[in-house]
Picture: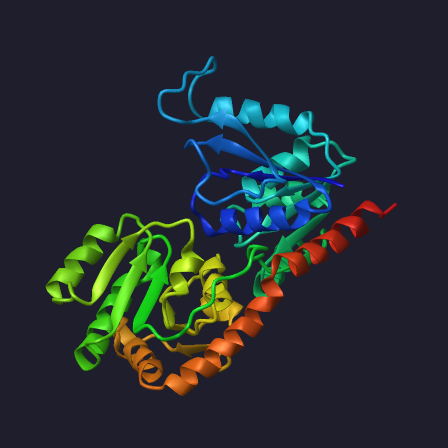
Length: 359
């Protein structure tokens, strides 16, 4: 099969980009796989792309690049329309509702069109109107599937296939470093400020432990000020962005995921693949969707008024109990095995072949 993945940008550092590049690599050993990036904003992709995968872009948005058409949405829409109308592929996988709507409208009808979804669209009108023209929707969790089934009123089949980890050997933590790590975009919804406050309690009781924060974003300045105000400059370190987050997680003994709305679970999955237990908040939309509490993780209820005490207690529980950390680490590897690129690719293949064989 010739399989095309359509991404808003394959050059960014988002978790969904990482997941789709991993999947593309997993399929490329048996199929002709192409990743189409609507925009190109930098010279090379942030995450590695398998050598067997073809990568191309539609609009070059790098600084200093001149275009015939005016800047902005018009140029992007024209380029996307041309690409979809001229697409030569057996299967097209789109990764954003706006792209899926355009694929439903303009991609050739003999192409199997699958929408890969991580959340629920804020504007449901175009989705209800155009998604029935697609062949399927794929979500990463059962909870997301149920939302899409309700939204589409059984007009389209919805399937659950987990995100894929890289096909290469995963780094493995030795679980002997007194390090708690966290990674992702430093934005308000990720609640890194609560993690910093929780770690202030941990550092007061166990001063030999350290917190490493990986990533960047608009919250970084405020978080740095919070670290300074709490006198944690010897305990909390801002490590910057990295294309190899699993390699950094493998240096830790605990990974903290303070987000309450972890729509993209790659951070969680990558931590598990390193054999590192996860600590986070329980809840239907948090990291619990990707975890098995008490088998690979410790999840707590959020404290009232942003109280950091519950998260601090969960961290201290694992800090002080090496035996439990090791048990959860083994469970983490077991959970991660379901996300191995080869097994995830097989599930996608079964879906694609099934959709192509329909009358």
